[in-house]
Image (tube, rainbow, N blue to C red; front, side, top):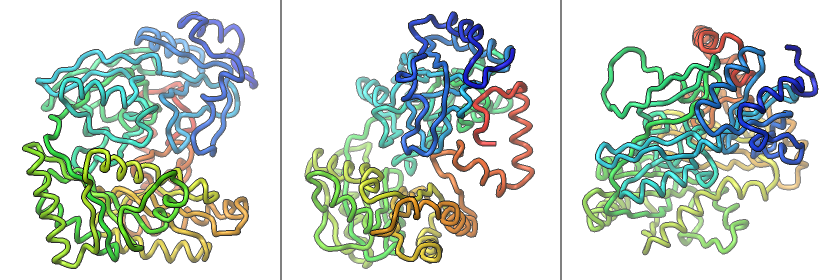
Length: 476
C-alpha cells in the first residue's frame, strides 16, 4: 500500500483504528503534539495516528498489520527520553504506538523478590507497589513520576542507584515482547539461573524499540533497607573525591548505594535557580559529593558506617567538610538538590550535553583533559559536570558563555561534541552511558564504533525486523 507523504493512507488508518477502537486513537493535531516532541526540544516529528492499545493481543494485531503494509511503527512510553529515540520522523507516515494503557502490575511475589509489570507502568507507581509489600525496586530516575517501565528497559536506564543494584538490564529477569511480525515472545520467567540457550531478553533491553515492542517484564525486587543515611561532602579536588570513593567502598561495601559527584558550577546554578535552595555546606568547595549508605541490619549500622567513612576521609585529607542529613526530610532535600541540577541549566541559556562514561579510576584525568578540550572550542564556556561517579557515568555538559548569543554557541555543537567525545574515546569510554543512541548519536555511533560491531547489529536487526518497520532511523 502506498504511503501518503503527509500521513497514512486513510483506508490503512481505519484498519489500525479498528484494532484499538476510535476512542483510543489520537488524530487531532493539538492532541498529537505531546507525542511528537521530546523533552530537550532537539527533535520534532509528525504523525497522523497515535495508537493506544490496552492488551498484548492488540499490540500483536497492530504489528502484524504494520509488517503486512510496511508501515513504520515508533513505540513510545512516557516520552522522557533524551536522544530522540521515541519521536517519529517528519514524514507523517510513521505510527506512534503508545504503551501507556498497558499499565497493570500483574503480580508481586515478595518471597521470590520479583514483580511482573506491564510496559506502561509508571516508575513511581512501581516504587509504591513494591513499598506496599515491604520491598524495594531500586531504579531511581529524575523522571520517575512520568517515565514508564517499557521505556526504562528499552533505553537500559541507569540513574543514581546503579552503583549498588545495576542498571535496568541487571534488574530484568524476563520479558514479554511482541515482534514486528506480531509473534509474541513470552519469556516472563522469575529465574535467576537459566542457561537454556541464548539470553534473548538482553537483545531487547537497550534496543530502543528497534527489534520489537516490550509489553511486560519480570523485574527484581530487594528487601527494604532498615537504615539509610545521606551525607553531603565538600572536597578540594576530583582526585580527593575518587580517594573518598575508594574509602567508602572499602568500609561500606555493598551498603554504599549512591556516590554522586557535583562540580562547583552546577552548584552555583542550583543556588541561583532552585526556589528556597540552601547550600548544604559552608564555603565554596570545587567538588562536592552526595553519598548514601543503606544498611540491611539497622539504622544504627547505617549511621556508624557513614560516620566511619567520613572520619577516615577527614583523617586522610580527602574530606574538607561534610554534613549528615538530620532527618528523612533533610535527606530528601539533599536528593532534591541533586535531581534538579539538569533543570537549572536551562535558566543559564543553552547548553551542549554529554552523557559519557569512563573507567572510574580515569575520572579525574578525564575531567582535566575534557576541560582543556572545551576551552579549545569556546574559551569562556562553562563546564557543568555532575553525575554518577560510583559507576563512571558523568553528565559533562557545557553551558554557553555569559553574554554569548545562544544560537552562536549552538553552532559549535558538533565541534564541542567531537572534542569531548575524542577525550572519552582516549580513555576507552562510552559516548552514551545511560541515555541511549536514538537519533542524536546514531551517525556518530556508526562512524566510530568497530565496523564489525555495526555489521553484527545490522544483521540482528534484519533477522528480527526484515520489513524494517521498527523505529526506523534510530540506533543504526
